[in-house]
Length: 272
Ligand code: DGL
Image 1 (tube, rainbow, N blue to C red):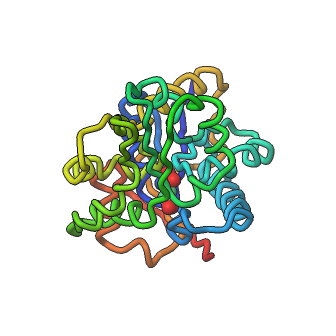
Image 2 (tube, rainbow, N blue to C red; image 1 turned 45 degrees about the horizontal axis):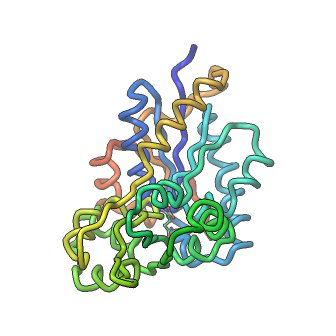
């Protein structure tokens, strides 16, 4: 069968944490990464506009890459648009949603912190996850406004303001009745890029859940069940990043993608 072609998608660089896990799980696969750099960050978008944007961008990307599977490596996009994407396009999708179920199974104190974008914490999908899997826990959801951008700044080689980081994560750490948060869900794919810094400024030690390895296993399972057609044209080479805006394709950004295994790039202009 032909080499698997996998398209990974995020608003920015966060999905690289998922790409890293997929590459480890499926070293033979041909990976193309796409970032809606023109639309970044997704965290603050209004729901309706964001769904329309994601559907349009993914349509263009599928046409350009002809993938066997699309990984929506973005919680903000998955929690709002996965169902519509599956209705609209025939290719199989694997999404990323906050790892509330494993956190609820892991916690001993029953106090769970979730760090995500303001969009993800407001979604019904996220609240339904809590209702179904973590009804016996106290879950503190925090919509962090700057964390995704800080993660990108780090990858571009800029210094991180640790005081700002401390403030951004603080609401996920809570004490109740002599117990305290013992697990924090990294509910945005950007956040594992900052996990060392987060652990450094956290008020106490907790277990952090990065769902990337579980997503990579899911990708492998879905690929196993998917017949793989030859591409009808020459798709981008393995290790290509596609960006939706040229101005975000500045040297430091491209260097960051190259360092994470995506040294080639294409621009598919899609202004917002
Ligand atoms: N990486 C994204 C997520 O997993 C979103 C970051 C953003 O665009 O705000 O939610």
